[in-house]
Structures are given as C-alpha cells and as structure tokens.
Image (cartoon, rainbow, N blue to C red; front, side, top):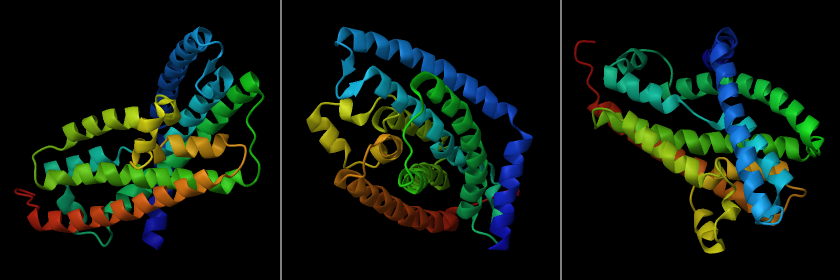
Amino acid sequence: MNKYLSILRLGWLDAMEFRTEFFVSIAGWSIRLFIAVFLWLAVASARGGTIGSYSFNSILVYFFIVQTISSFIFSRVGFEMAYDIYRGDFANYMLKPLNYIAFRLIYEMSKNALRTTISAAIFGVILFAAFGGISLPLWKIPLGLLAMLGAYGVNSCLIIIIALSAFWITNATRLTFIYFGILTTFSGMLFPIDLFPPKYAAIFEWLPFPYIFYFPAKIIQASALTPELLRGFIFQWGYTLVLGLIVTLIYYRGIKRFEAIGR
C-alpha cells in the first residue's frame, strides 16, 4: 500500500512541476467554450430561447460543468500503455513489485486531481460571475465525486482495453483516436444526451458512454436526487466492474504473448 501512496504523491508533484501544459489546455477549453456560447446562442434564438428542455443559461452551465470535470475524467493512460507495449518498455515494469495497470491509473488520477482543483477554481469564478454560481447542497458533493470516479473508471477501462490490444497488433494508438471520436459524440461531451430524439436517447442509456460525461454533469446540475439518477449509478458502476474484469482478463492473456526483443 505504501508504494501506491508514494505513486500518488509523485503524480501530484509531477503535475505541480509541469503546470504549463495544463494552463495551455485551459486556454484551449476556453476557446471551445466561447464557440459553444455563440453556437447555442444562435440555436436558442432560432428556437425561441430554449433548446429542448434546456434554457440558454442551463445548457451553458452544463458545458462549464463538463469542462471542469473533464480535467479528472479524461484519460491519457491508453497512449502511455500502448507505447510501453509497442516499444518494449513494458518489460521494465514486469520486473517491479507492483501492478502495472494500478501504477498507471493511480499516477494519472493524482495528476488529474490537481488539474480538476485548478479548473474548478477557474470555471467556478466564471460561473459565479456569469450565472451567480450553481446550487451545491451537501448531498451533491459526495455523489458528484462518486460519479466522477465512476466515470473515470468506465473511460479508463475502455481506453485500456484498446491499449492492451497492442499485445496482438503493432500499434494501438490509431484505435484510441477512433474511440475518442465515438466518445466525443455519445458521451455528452459536445451536447447533452437528452437532446437526441427520445428513441435514440433511450438506446444510448444502455451504452457506457453517457456515464462518462453526461451522467456526472446531470448529478451536479440536478435539483434533487431522483430514481433515474440512482439507476444511473447502478449502470455506471456496473459497467466499471464488468469492464475492469475484461481489462484484467486481457492483461494477463496479453502478458503471455509479450516479447521485448533487445530489451
């Protein structure tokens, strides 16, 4: 346990050491938010001030929430794992007394935690200045954190499954880019899932993608804890458990095929 706590600390210190990358990404998000403001302003104006069940203000708050929590949920671990396997660096971790997947996830989560703290402070000020903030009763804080952790679990497991395919194919990074395209469309990152036609939204609820961005944002934005949100937790953590078991199975099968010639 102490070694993983040390990994957690090292990830936090690494994020503090290399802050420029994060602030550059904040600038990129800000540009995307400005584009979203003008886009949804045009859509709301054309539809009489509302977008489905959302007002112009509420959908902008949704996007601010998504941008904030994405600092924690977004995972880069797939690229690192795929490169480790492809280049043979994975052999170095096989000699160490730790679980490789746990090492990668804990190290990244500690860095993401710092990024989320900073982005929450920045976007929180913007939300307060523009909309007077958002309601955060006590019940939202633990449930919001639980939803973000589950979202990270679902997203990371899907990315790791793709990354571990590098045990069988030469380079898995291209598949990761395809996944990000699917994720952007069907996770609620670009627009809320409930803006899809009802029959499609009902289908998407059975997929893992809405539980990555859409569900945590709805938890934070909700006015009350409803049965639908409780059911969302069951789906989200059910997916985390099932995908985690699949990751474990693929990982141990892949180790048997791994070769590090020249390492």
